[in-house]
Amino acid sequence: MGLVKAFPLHIAIALLTAAALHAESLLVPRIAGEWQDLARDSAVAKLIAAQEASTSFADGAESEVRDPFLVQIAGVWHCYYAASDDKTAAIFLRTSADRSQWSKRTMVASGGQAGTGADSARNPCVVEAEPGHYYLFRTHRDDAKTATSVYHSTDPMKFGLDGQNGDALHFVTTLPAAARRVVKQDGAWLIASDAKFAKLEWQPIPTPARAKTRAPGIHIRVALFDDRGSAGKGVPSVSEQLAKAGDIEVATLDGGGIRAGLSGYDVVIFTGGSGSRQANTIGALGREQARRFVEAGGGYVGICAGAYLACDGFSWGIKILDAKTPSPKWERGHADLKIETTGAGQSLLGLPRESVVLYHNGPVLVPAHNPAIPDFEPLVFFRSEISKSDDQAGLQINTPAIARGTFGAGRVLVSSPHPEQTPGMEGWIVRAVRSVAAP
Image (cartoon, rainbow, N blue to C red; front, side):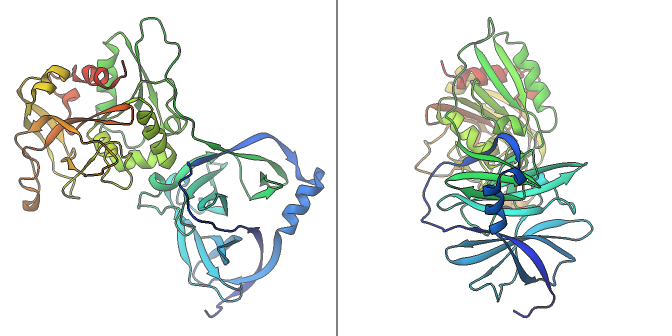
């Protein structure tokens, strides 16, 4: 590759060796203890200084190239760097066998919760916390606040791109610091920020625990997701109906609340809006927390977007329901549709045998045939449909409108339409919660 423009830069060097991929759990980094003055610890200062080197690197494609970080993976040099113009920024990668000739650039991270502005991608740093598991530390600044978002991948060239569900597949957590270096000393991980450093711990995701104590009269504790991706009347409708039950306690959680884990809850609910946006809001860690919660015995209720989120058929799904959609064209429309409830559905949910329900672009469910997930059971069927194109016609009639399943020790119930917003059916949500709550 011809060098269009060369200039000296300081490149942080961390020598990592890739190993065979194995199925270890997702790890969550956490800053442990107090920040220490780097100048007062000569050993750490020398370690970081030894990993800095002056080199030449050229890139004529971006208006500003900064913060290169060099790491060796499987014998190949990977140079991650930030590049931006006046409005947007992203993390790029070039590779080399000898650090003299470099590959064409590849964008490896952009957008998502870290943003797209000029200061949304700084100080990229990639480490291999476990063999085959890579973590990108990406510093960003917004409204004078600086933080570092962390992304996980099993491919060191892919950490999530804006508009491609990058956060749903890769986002782990955000650290309240501007990380400039992440290094390892005598088996211990350290994170450096400007002239200070602190310990960095990698924590496995714990198994969710049921609540040991409850408020008097409370038998079921519900976590209700309320953040980007939830829209319309879903959250207020569900909150209002569950409040009438008396023995059900509801807490609304944002994306960070889901990522923090669902210990102490019995049921988690995701209402209408956008399933993929909900997935991006909770990130890869939140998806894993929800999946483990159900697997350990928790209940899951998904309505419309929340039903999409439960499915196995989407890369960004939680994958606790053996279902997918027969067409990627999700925008079918908004209408009152005829439904028919099975005997089991009538008994479990209190719905009449035949009725009409509000529908707004919910999933058309068909089996995904994943042998790792038990088959779902339809409780309610669509007997009419709405479609916006000829190739969608006929796909919805006689498919499940409401279905239940199991995953691990937990129970899953999803509804494509909105009975919680249909006059006369609002109390359905209380029965739905009771049906998935562990006895």
